[in-house]
Image (tube, rainbow, N blue to C red; front, side):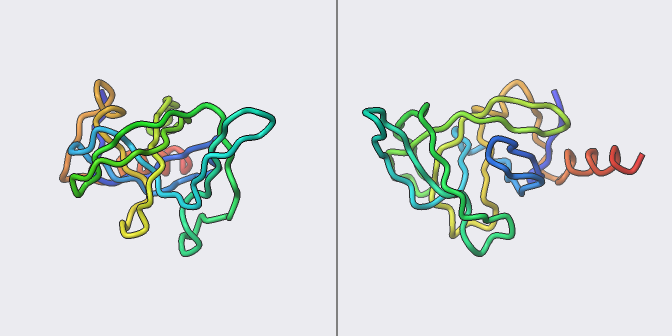
Length: 147
């Protein structure tokens, strides 16, 4: 298992996000990503969800509308203890130079400083969390670029 700090950066190639800030949260079960304008739509008799990632104040915001056919709807307990119905999408994350599958709940996180939260479901059996460290994956990536 790799040691990960409390904050890092990762790539989400299917979402066109590179070196984006992530926060490791062992108190959260589900990983989540900040998005807005989330809605379920029907196209040619099939259900999709569409959404925009991040928000206009974020440096990587591009106003692209994502449409996803394969998704789930789950009850997720928010950080405030309220149970919410959220859409969950499957995507890929690249961290420590390795690609993993990850399920992300689509969440309105505009009041949070970091747009992506990695929860226990993703971290389990892959990472050990060192809360005194940060950017371990990003530092490794930077070192590889410079060699």
